[in-house]
Length: 316
Image 1 (cartoon, rainbow, N blue to C red):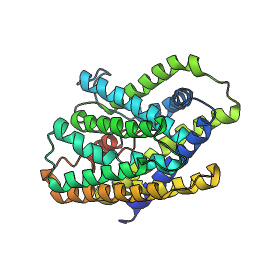
Image 2 (image 1 turned 90 degrees about the horizontal axis):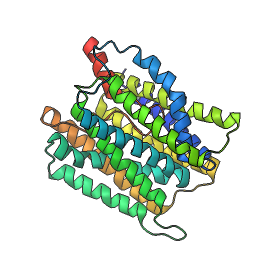
Image 3 (image 1 turned 60 degrees about the horizontal axis):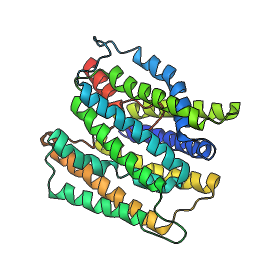
Image 4 (image 1 turned 180 degrees about the vertical axis):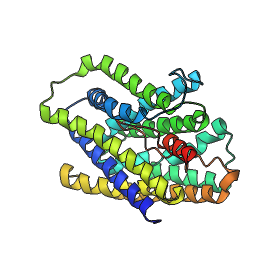
């Protein structure tokens, strides 16, 4: 049934949006360092169960140590930046900034993957970046803040991390690409925890466990989505998060979506959809870096969906 793929993806992104709303709620009390540390701690058992099924031979030493190190650094920065942005910015505004990721992937794929990007996709990137400027334009009672910088930073570093995975993913074991960023988050955030730690009640610790469970479960839904649907249809489902962000923001945080955010969101989403359309048309002549970036990134229980899809396809 062709509609199953998009439905699974919509369910996955709804879980991701709920995941982000809890981050925002806890971010009003706790530092992102503390949130990421405990969310990563709770994620280790979930990811470990998944990795137990990895029958590939080898050890935990990366085949491409420098690329793996750079990707790990990018993943840590992207996750911290996203968590901080969710904590201090309206949910919808944060999503709009993160939606710039496909635009940046298109650009970064040129030097790293050798992707040839024509005038159409470059034009779409320029138009999309104009949409980002629309969102960031000064407005009454709001100025460019560290939160906006964090949202942009998360998009940039998540894009770079995604392109690196496209470059080395066929050589590296999934366990390496999954565990290194998690271990780095655990070590770095744990070291910084002493500077910002605030005692947490059991209910808030439970909220962190829920963040991990939601991120992990959403990833499973995304795997099901791509197994049951075409990437060109499943990938654009990420933009449904703006609906959930507007709804959660209004109900739980008394947020409203202003006109610049709506206009910018429309421009960025249309640009992203056009890039997906162009990559679909190019087919084997393109690396299709956006279509093949199937993991959302910046989640507590993040794992690379494309790696498990590739492995399942090889078994099939």
